Length: 464
Image (tube, rainbow, N blue to C red; front, side, top):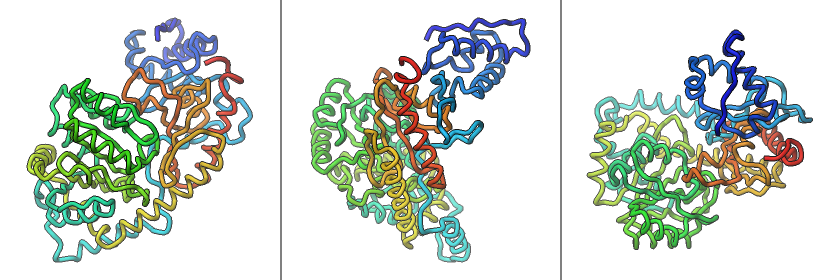
């Protein structure tokens, strides 16, 4: 966007002068709805003022409902009237934003997690037979933790030896260790055209080329995998087969078979992220079960049990155990045994399964709630998922819709957050149902979204 702000420097305070000029450009149409504004630092440099001055100016204009800021995306011009000027009893001035952007697990029904945490900590404090939890652990984790991790994995349909399971501090660490071990800076890795945003961040950090692979509702197609591998020399395929983030799709068995064959024929490593897999009791076994020598499998407890534990288990091909263990040693010397011991006691004693079931039941209830309120939308999502993928009607675009929703007190994630290619245009948003503690807040937020769809920019706010 080529835009320059004409500033009256005689007016004071300066931040209000910037705010008035910006508001004038929005109101006059010089800045159209959905336009992305310069970053605070960029505008400060252009105007020759401090970043703090621009921050105060943006905050003032946002308070007036003319612009909206999205963490990690930027600041956008809102659609005229989306800050509650059309009839919408669910929006109150100054109301707290309802977060449907972050994919937090919902509170588990039927179990008090705080009580379970107190119980296991008291148990640890009095158990003389517990392993030493305050010394440096082996890089791959204590043998008992790896054994329990293999038991937890077996419930997905992946049978593996404890010797091939490594304990990590969450899925992010597992991904980081994997990508720094099996590829080199400058290498290409493949992922579905819409993928987990943390993978995009990791690729940038590690100087890897992220290659989008064509996918349909069943996942990446084997033809696209083979073609992308030939064209780019990519050696790794990252995938999220069960309750895909962001679309919520579940890859059927036939497609898993086809993806495994395509990966084997192309000589690819497959990194399978199963953050949500255990939420769907009908999901097929992991792809890693079909690729014993090429498949890496990450099973995190963050979404299914407790995000704050920062615990995941990583299954690796037998010949890669030593290399990955050395990678973990280089990253962190070894994962803290204390949260691992809490997680393993919960798994072995049945608490983890109860929490998983409680979160699944709450997710299913919230899915039913969403499907009733948004019955007229085109959308995807597993019945046990924490999120849904909403297709937007013409002429909405995901960035402008997210900005308009934010102005109405609801935060959602636009498709651009997940797109591997910056040039891709996908008219959709991800709506997460887990963060609000009460279903009443979800109903309020979803009704605002539904109302916003009816007040389309074409009919109410002018052309896109």
